[in-house]
Image (cartoon, rainbow, N blue to C red):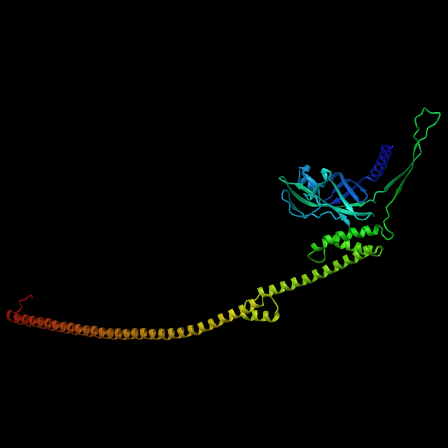
Length: 425
């Protein structure tokens, strides 16, 4: 009796679970004409949700097919936490973890990553019995070897809808009293009738709807990404989620969800203002840094100190201005001393040059006098030689004439003596 009842109960519960566990196939297109086809099943038993990845088909475009000839090393990955791992290395694109629904309790895995081709499964608990959804960002990766994956690109997000909580079953049985029939052989006849199986769906609350689940899922995703933003505009995906959350704001009736929406939007606006202030500070700081870097003279540093009195470079600018002023004073003193020394050198040099010039002039005068004396001496000598030569010639001529006259006279005398006898001289 009890065994039959237990068997029927288990059978009904199993049938209800298997009926809700149907396969879902989703196609994601991404990158360079690539796409993947993922098949999974999602089941829920009470507050426990189970996800089973069953298969994945990759249809890669020509880019990755030509770049990687070892197609079996190209895998589809997803992550439940981001951080440094001891045994596995990831390079390339930065991954994103699973965006869990609000009020979900999940125990992180040890490795933090899953390979879809290995058909992994996930389990988590929901605090609410309503429906909802969560996102699993998928990434195309190439296994480089030695526990090293290079993440090539994101494949998109696998949107998983969470079914309602499984029904609670209660069996009501009516058992008739065993009575002995005179017509029967003394053994009591046991009659048992299973009258009905009542299925009651747990209530979701009057003001809790699917919009609340969508809003809570968005809130969870936004709150996980908001602290990571470091500039404006923020990530385009986060901006779209904010827009979707604003659209849901008017549709949500649950006060708790509406309050969480207001707090999330307030946190978003506050973070946006903080980033705008930080960006403006960085812009001003860059302007101050550039202005300080472009200073080169004492006047530049003094002007910088007046223009940016609260700058972190203000003290350094004053020190630079004082240093340049001291250098300028030292340079002026050196110039004055150098001018005096130059004047002295010029005066001494002029005197030396003048002395050299005077000595040269004296030498020139002495040389001229010597030349004149030598010239006069030579001229006198020449004149004496000419006079002597002239007198010599004169005496010689006179002697010659006298000799000729004496010979002529002698000849004439001889002629007279001898008559016509000719005497040759």
